[in-house]
Length: 401
Ligand SMILES: Nc1ncnc2c1ncn2[C@@H]1O[C@H](COP(=O)(O)OP(=O)(O)O)[C@@H](O)[C@H]1O
Ligand SMILES: [Mg+2]
Image (tube, rainbow, N blue to C red):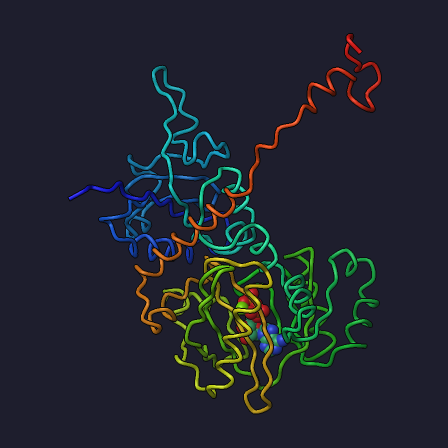
């Protein structure tokens, strides 16, 4: 039997964010899904303070009940942006006489961070610099999907139905709140939703029915984000989510789910704390009890939206729907990792193992596609500039000029 080399997958989880704990759980779901015969999983844990660690004890979720970073086999690490390293530098700050920092090469990185820096494109940017294939959306799609206003603008411009909203900045609000309120009242009717533009997990989101609450809620949201949005509430709507998987060469849509909430909308606690196991703890109906026509329309809008932002990998696309009026609005695109939606793909006969392997495959294909664009464009610009002197800098002329 030929012993093919295992694929080394670095799974990044935790994070310097309010969604630290959720991400630790997601990270472990991902790590456990890989076939240990074919994949070597390297855990990469970012603690609440933003320090990066790796080491075998991080593979066991129960170790996180203690101070996991105090285990002897857990060492500090960082992902090198240099293409030379193509992975982790272990113990980068060690200064022992005979110690040299060691490199752990990674074939692929699987980000399982939620919220800020995990799905906003910044981590993706680091992995682009490092030239390491990574699972999920690229820099642009991640950044766009992380911004509720930009997402709305792009979708609207391309005929995907979205709810009307007014976008403004914290500065505009602080300078002239009455002008902002006048704009909102001229265009929208209560109930309204106030949203920070780049946060997730319902943080800072409020449903308001009065001018006083509108003002107060914008004040709260303005403490959380520089960009804000007020949106018309869709009355008597149900929520429908659809996961999409694939890339520009082909997308699959999952079965639909209807998360069921007995409050006005899902709060952070409801999403994550009740039962403590990610979205699984919130109640949901799968498949969503809506007509086959509406189901097909939502699936096709989900795929279209993912294409419009040049998404790849996986995302969960959330809709606000009024089945009685046949109205559908796309509410948001949650790019991986916030939303692996293992449970939706299981309904579509895709096991978590198949799902993570497919995602790794997509990551490698995307990397290969990128490689087709050449970075080695040779010029003689440096020699020419050296000979003529650098433009705009007096006295920079070479003596030969
Ligand atoms: N325009 C709206 N009309 C009705 N309900 C809304 C509207 N916008 C948001 N909601 C409710 O608020 C929840 C959180 O809003 P969402 O935009 O999904 O933010 P997050 O990024 O925090 O998930 C939604 O799941 C939905 O229940
Ligand atoms: Mg949401």
